[in-house]
Image 1 (cartoon, rainbow, N blue to C red):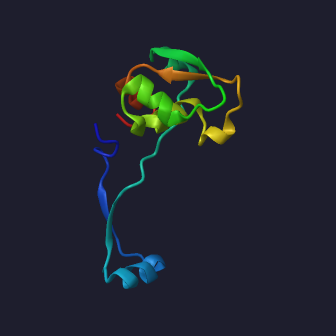
Image 2: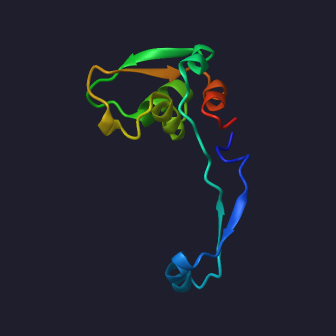
Length: 112
């Protein structure tokens, strides 16, 4: 389930990045358009089965993603669902929610 499957591929030939393209002998760079994700509302969260987790010393989003989804690359779903950019923003003892269904989490985040 690729994260960017619904997004267009853009051709970036902006002058702003010309110094990078010159170094690499490129005329432009193909890239995905930036997805716009939203923070899920309380009503959105009601429809997503989740479990509560108490954050403790040594926890990492990628470890939780591996435990709950079998794939550490989905760490960003847990982080975004809880409104955290990185683990640095979480304190020991904080409660976070971990969506049990990737499909439901992606839907409420506005991606699926």
